[in-house]
Image 1 (cartoon, rainbow, N blue to C red):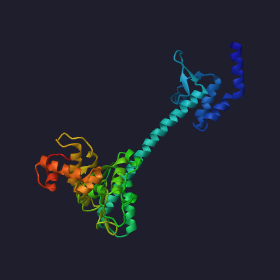
Image 2: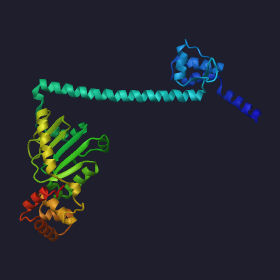
Image 3: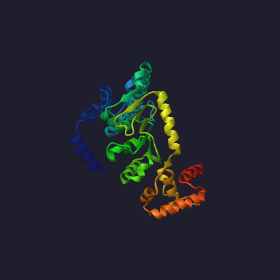
Length: 342
């Protein structure tokens, strides 16, 4: 057995060649030349006494290329096996890369903060940049699609049915999975008219599937895009295609933010439709109540819930009796007051 092992070791040594040359080939591109040469010499010599006055000895130990014998006095400096040395070197490089990556991210964050401060100072010194009137259709359309990518904390938008072209995929903007994974909050406030059209409902569902929080509300007055506390795009016409304001004024952004939050609080979460209720109304009656409160007509509610018009009207009668009101508008107000739409 011992003879076989010695023969095997001999053949391996013949295959590997000179250990010093092998070590140099493995580590020369990964370590400073003095460290590589010292390790190769230590490996070839089989170890030597530690020399405290030589900083390279400490570096060999700290890099995991050598170790001190624990039970000898004075201690001897011994080289680790070449593969162990290579693994230690690569592990140390990985740690250094991770540290540099963190510093790189910190650098980018500092750059973004500097850019924000610089932009704020520039705006304060140049008021004409705080609000810009846009009239070019292509520029407005491009901003409507791309502003969502600038969000670092939150993107909020109001979508109405007013458009110069039929409702399609390009009518609303939805976040990509990568955006959602970054932890950015996306909220879309849709006019209730979207639910009256199959394509409109499909677009809403697409936004929800992409990670957007969705609420609906009747009679939304304008289209709006809000990105963080950084920029807003506000439509100046019903469609917004021929005129819009690009706002960077902190004062105006705060006002539009408060306006959006007010509407958001009053709007109905679409995800609530189909949920059970303990208010005395059946699930279907509560669904009818939610859509009724958002201004939808009976015919639209029937299509939305895939039930007959007669069923909807019977549910509306039951709702009014339960809420003790005589008009549809009063039913919506009573439902809001009693928290039935939360």
